[in-house]
Image (tube, rainbow, N blue to C red):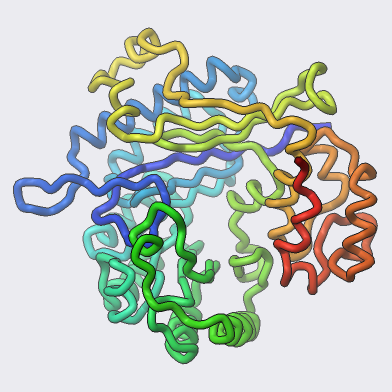
Length: 411
């Protein structure tokens, strides 16, 4: 039995302006002498150095990772496209000195559609990024204003064209629906526009009001539930007619264009997390752990200033490592046998086809047969597949996923 595939997540915590619905670890940049928020060359260099030191510390704790090839990389944020192509080139050079990467490694960068960031697309491609995820959210100027987005409707169109012109044949459009004051016609018009631009992948999901956001404290007027159902049903029909596969709750792809990095999350794979507030999940064989498999969740110092304080503006890697034996780690948790079923199902059941039943033991160390009472009860309610070789919801169960997940939670 093999350990899970390994991915790499890297977090860039800054943005031009914090959106009122955003609950991610993102922090508005300070303005430069021109009054514009900017990631300075000095801050960029410090952060690249800190990321490489963070990785070196992780590899001291998990030296076996040096021999496990990385199958995907994802740069999230914040706004990762605030960092320059040269910064990414320096970062990749340092990463490749410490890790092995698959020859066909998928490398995704989240990007905003602003004109400044569009100009960098060719440089990102040359640096080694081969997939872009463009945060459009809406093509309508009124909706963009209500969402607090910094780009215009015209820039959204231009960004997707610029991505294709720069040689990116794998482009995701990130689009939301159920927006403030949005009608079904407005939501479907956004969707038709996105589909007309022929992205290889589409992330289409409903706006939710998350704690610790401006929208949560000051809720905007959102569509009623019956309107949301109408948007969802009509939108899915449009997407399927356009030739996309609905393979995950909010993800649609042309054949063969699924997001490999996210698929590794959803199949309970391993991933290193680097950067301020980044989370990771790693597995290793351990006879003392449940099923002989130890699974550890790890998370890093959240505040950028505290994260960078470990670096202290030094570009000397040996000096950084000497300062802090833990690197940039804020905490760890080893998953108990009781936690693993729900942790696995929260991810795997987001997939339309679920996963092979054998994957459960391979990724958790536990036996799928132990789930039989829960699965039999779900099957009796027509919420679970009849296929004994798969762990998956029925079409009805997938529509009511939260109901399916409830019995997997253990006290």
